[in-house]
Image 1: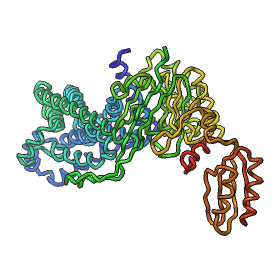
Image 2: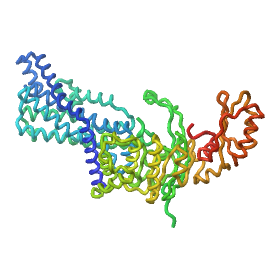
Image 3: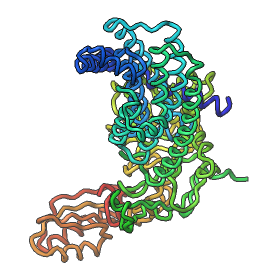
Image 4: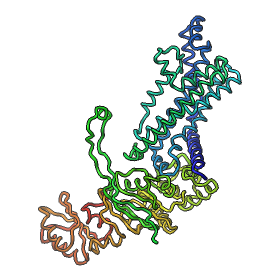
Length: 279
Length: 337
């Protein structure tokens, strides 16, 4: 068995271990049932309340958002938010839990690549995340009567899949910091807040000042959420969003390289300072 | 041709910073005023293949730091290390692949997984070939007598069982070298004995075992050779029997003496008949540890000394020489201080 195959097997084992542990706390999955529905639904209702369902207000929204479908717009944005939250918190939290539990050193004393504990837990999060998407889709249909065509849903799934590396890389960048600094929760909170504000999660990017829009279009989530809305709500297809996908993949590659570099540097620093075993 | 040492450390040093330097101090470029202390201060060590080698010392002596440097978890400040002939700084993955390590004991396991699930995960991390994984896990579980509880959640295990499972995990890569950091800490006497038996079996299988402990009995009973470590330095290194011979006493006598006034007179009188390794006064009680050739001769002399100085012997205990006494004679402190 060559080293790469052995590390891939370790990678799968890390994801399976994480899933097994999640399964042993079934109540965690309760959150998956109501948060993906309650939070976006409250934003949709708030939007309707503020507009008073005035056709002029809805037209103004459609002009900025590119679609008059307020519920679809908000649900897609929230799906992105939850996905982003899960990956931003997920890898870092998993690494932090290993550190606090005392298992991080046991993992790091094995010959497996350091990238296994870094990336492995994130893979396990894709399953509950997929479930979240399904629940949000069902809620959108059941409560707001929005049913995108199947072809659009399948194409949106492709956008989601091609967006995984970018979000994964962003999450990993913060997870790496756990090795050296321990608690990185407040930084993740800050970054998540910035993404919510800048990436058009709950409102169109067009509402931002021009300089902020420039920054917004440097962040992969802005492209992903925009492409999902174009496909699901505005009838675009994969060919239309192809350039965006290419940009997202390029940024993902750059962030992933940066994450691996940062991880290596911080791991070396932690091995010098003894931070691996401390918390 | 002689085999390469299982572990070789030469002038090994690890310096840590004590205190903290705030982000504000860093941003302002203030000089780093943190105190540097040498957790490991020039250790030289050669562990031969197939032996059980113990690092014995009190908490904070530098045992775990040394172990972590050997296990690639810490980068030394200076010095040379070879593990099974490999430089862990240049080739850390090669070292990890050949090393079974039990470092954080029961805490290092996933309590919400079963023992088998824990070992399945670590077998993948240790790159055990898929075709061998099942047999390797069964063998490791049997080696620590946990085969019948393999499918129980670890949270339902006793501390001793978790320690044994951590040892089973260390055996997964079928390592020629096993490092154990305080393997019996927190265990009851029965569980400790059981774990020590498992460690002896490792030696019988031809593996080298390097362990740290602050239990002198453990080092005495288990180790072929012991390095006594204090303040990051090795203060003595030999077989337990040879170490005990160094204090030139056959027996150790612990005395508790009631003293009203100055204790120097009784100490001086006692010192004529034995080597006093330690004397400490607390309120009206003087506690003395004396190393002597024969307790049969020293005890009457001690009573005479007490009587002639107006003191009273309240308690007397005669014990054989232990590594604790060796540590005491070398450092002037007890291991548990």
